[in-house]
Length: 533
Image (tube, rainbow, N blue to C red; front, side, top):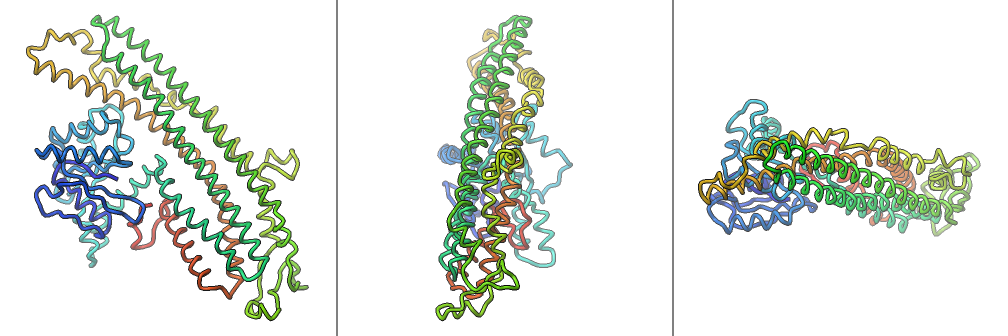
């Protein structure tokens, strides 16, 4: 995550606040940062501090641009003094020229020094962007207030709240989730949790518990891996969709910026180009939806096979007909082995509903209705999920139509000046070479701005699609995982005598779960607001 902007805009102070003072960049000098410096943030994110641009030092500009070229995420930092010509041009270069608008947040710093009426700063950012409809997310913060809040005292909470640093963290998480970055960062946590699940079986005190824990861990692993593969494949489909759109959008803008001198003829050419663009964008969206359907069908088919195999495991018989002393009072409950080699375990009766756990493990047999006959397949979880995905990304998926893209393109083209200036764009009107060059630069900026306008909608379509897919598949998968976790805890809690290693594994698993909850948007406990995964 690269922080960039003009010198003395507060980038280093912002890093200090985001990390709760764990990182202490040098912020004393007038042009404090003269090199690119990387700082780890909670082991998951690298914050990159860059030299201020337009400071008069070309080397600083080059270092900043090199860092930006490797960025997954950009915080464009500007003070409450807002934009001069240089910072405005730099913002446009990143958002429009380099097409990085989908991974940027504008952070306005030092907000406690100067107040502003509602909407004034947002409009200043919009004017600086020079676009018609596309907006960058904006967060107004004060790093000094946040650090004062960390010092404690009766006004600590008020300082933190006024600083809005937590609002910035929430915005970073939201956009990361929309773009799929958050899922990539969460994957190591899922892996840690998975390894803990699998290792717990090694420390179980009896064969029945070992078998159950191993099977439950296999179920959890299968679900987590399919979810990860879904996300990885979606990221590839997302990138290909935007790439295909970009080719046609640039072609349209090229046509719009080179219209015939005759205004009537120019309008005819523009309308024809616009119609071709809309047709191609609709086609790309349809292909995007079809590939999402195919992806969901393939991954859930694989998951059903994995869950079916787990549900048919020979080890399941050990759960349904466990060995040991059977309690006549509760036939489905088994007491620990009373042999001399298990004297410790004998002192703690095991109260585990093995039949219920066995039913949970066998549930995979009904994922597609397998083992229950074809009549049951239509109501199975896997079938329902694929049907819901197909409905959402089939009949309902008309994103460009919903955005009335034809109207958006027409307005953007007119504001960009392509239609209005079509008949007066000859170079004979320019008095000298400098004015001709200035006109060329302006034309290039208009070209980039119009491409950004349209591609901004493509970015929105992709992020909305990701959200829709998650809305469909996450709740039932999360519910199944929760039931698996509950069963695992029941088995582990029943074994009152556990090794210290097993206890440490549970602590590690609990920490992974805590971080996953934080990154999923669950409100953190007091003092945990600095975690961003």
